Image 1 (tube, rainbow, N blue to C red):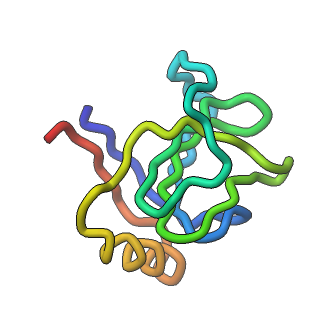
Image 2 (cartoon, one colour; image 1 turned 120 degrees about the vertical axis):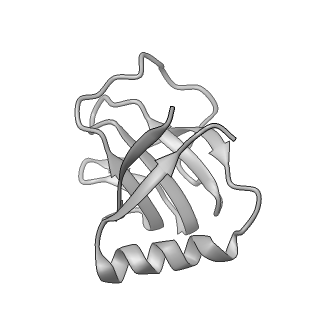
Length: 105
């Protein structure tokens, strides 16, 4: 921590933004995994049939890639300021990649 990246809008999954991490390995397997994160939930796809990525849902999501449905580990939930999630999603969709930063509170 902190973790900094660029968030781009998802291509196949619905209303979410994602941070592609390529071949980066966190050394974790599947735990508490889902293909349908709720708005505000952040999931980590640890790699395998698609690249490693982090996804933040701001609306309805069915997590997938060009190879089909995926499941990621739910590891963070945004618990306040949900009105900003949709703003981030639409800004990313219409204006392109946005800087994003995760840090300990």
